[in-house]
Length: 411
Image 1 (tube, one colour):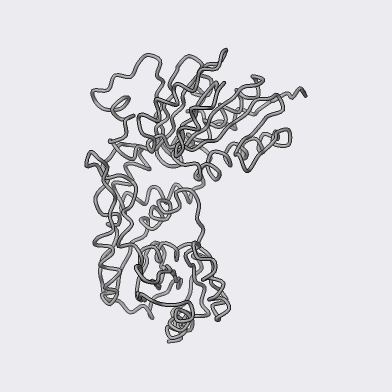
Image 2 (image 1 turned 90 degrees about the vertical axis):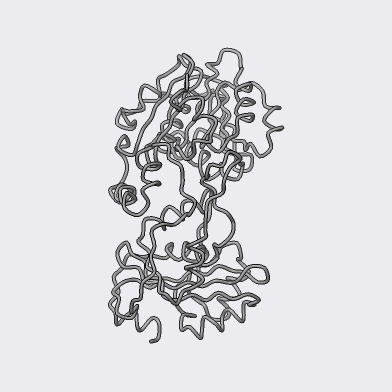
């Protein structure tokens, strides 16, 4: 086993998390915070330090679903190992999502969508529950039983946003009448505790105070707050002449056929405003027919961001002349991330876009068994809005003149 000396500049850590990183006295460590507070990075740093210092240490890292781990916790730990120049000394298994260090220590990533497999894992020293507000109480209690390896600290680390008071952790640790046990350490943080955030990210968070006050409380202030029924409240209907706007023309395309319609939405982005002026919503369209509709709208050659779930359709549209069409980017929580980004805009919808208006009036969050709105959207009234959500991935932030907009739209 090679001997590796690790010397880290203290500036790589956010000061607010140092007590947590060094804590070895508590069984439960609960990190609650808004978006960008740095809590997940702090957990990764703590666990890498522990793994490097303790040969044959084993840490179980879980999320509610296995598919969400690769682009979140797995990537985060690999990124931190790389920044600390340790990745080359580790064995990375992209298939099993395991990371094995030079001293035999290992990180094992598992989703709770197959909790029976979790029960078979042994010799676990610590458990990290990322986005623990997505985890139900019975699964959490099973995880507590997994951390029982001899000689370990057997800590259970929970990191999450305060998305719903229906989460069992709210009752256990945060409700006014909650009585956390003495073996529980609680740290609440916000984006202000993270000294590594770019100014643009901070501006986006702070802008939500005007566009979505509920999200501002949850994701900026890190406060528990019940979600409203409707997902988007940052919109209005207003007549406007899009040809006179100075901004960026963007197009989104959501595929459908029989039960669901194909939806194509055009808008002009001007600073943090989206002017939605054109909608195509039609069932039974083949890809050839979609290409003809785009041609008739004068946008076949325009940049289009389309649903990545249909790579075959995207390729067929390219062959039909849509040479600038691209797949939307998808990953863990991409729907919610896209919703959050779209909520940062002021959306102005032309009265002619009746289907888009209908969706904005009805697209809503799911309720849980207790009647609380969750952060999971109902899969209905979302075809135009999915297309609009895809379209903002194509923003280049370049300013177009009104004449350029006319030229693009062939008007």
